[in-house]
Image 1 (cartoon, rainbow, N blue to C red):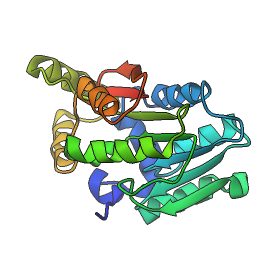
Image 2: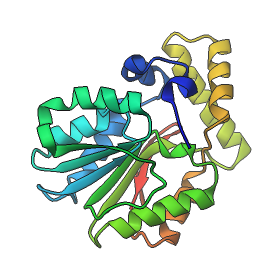
Image 3: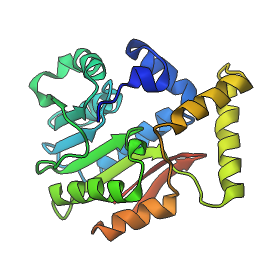
Image 4: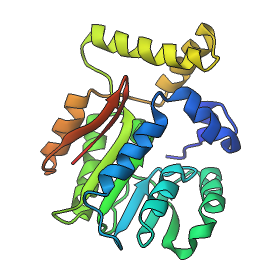
Length: 224
């Protein structure tokens, strides 16, 4: 399905990198955790796919850390890809820009990453299909890392996590009304499963050593 970050987040794509840091607690730590964890597995000249790679923030950090790696950024939002192309131009043909949905089959690669993207999959069944595609693209020693929001299925814990998230957003200058409006708008397209459900889904399609690599409030880095 077509997807526009401008419409979903009510912002201009050129403002995305600034505004996302007012929405996502621990954003920088989440990116760094993904990059650092890749270092345990990714070969120096490995091939990596960044699903829903957006403006290329994560891909930029990976390209810097792994100067011989080939990175494919997949996204269906042309405006986001245009920003990514400009940001990553200094890396030349090591970076490939692919206008494609993360629901499609993936070519063989050493690693797959995603960040603030896969919550657009509304059911666990759809998510399992994406996880299956990722698993099938990876070698036995490959790795998948996803940075996204997870929410406990326990109502009290879920409420507490939303409260922490809300307090963070208010600390960046938003009012209670603005925070509530953002959550209402996001709920039209976003679904957050529990960490237990995510890890179970990964294990169910064949991933070994499924782990939570980092967590702060709702934001989580997990994979296998």
